[in-house]
Amino acid sequence: MVKSYLVSALILLCVAIIETAIISNITFLPAIPDLLLICSIYFSLLNGRGMGEFSGFLSGFFIDFLSGTPFGFNCIFRTIIGYVIGWFGSSINYRGFFIPILIGFIATLLKVFLIWMISLFFPAVSSVYSIVSIPFLFELVVNALLTPFIFKILSSFDRMTSLSSSEGIA
Image 1 (cartoon, helix red, strand yellow):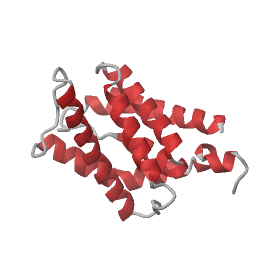
Image 2: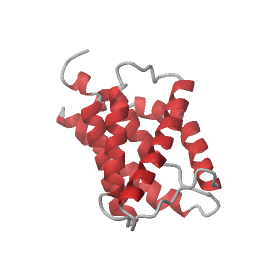
Image 3: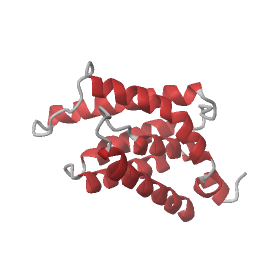
């Protein structure tokens, strides 16, 4: 069980570094694809709500630390998303192509909704998304299209990240 959490944390850290150090410096992109969100969604679908909370919080922590956003901002909405998506892990077949696209689409919409909700309670935090803006639509489409491919890549680590296999349950 500890090994699953550690390997998941290491994967999230590597993706956070790639997202903040490499992808954020590509100047012609209107928005940065949220690879950390997709990874934490995968871990929550694979292992349930507990891992969803852990991976959501940890991905938010890494993004807050590496990008300079106010600490806790990304942690709170990513934890909620990880928990909510983890609820559906045992009832959704996320191994195909079209269902992961739909999951990535819904998770990005949920992310924007939660950011908007947080900005209502904390006026100092301005909402960076407008539903009709090019950056939002770009991120929505790219996250949805990248989700099946990232799920496929992460499925090669299932033996190390799955809680059921590390506990001896097949």
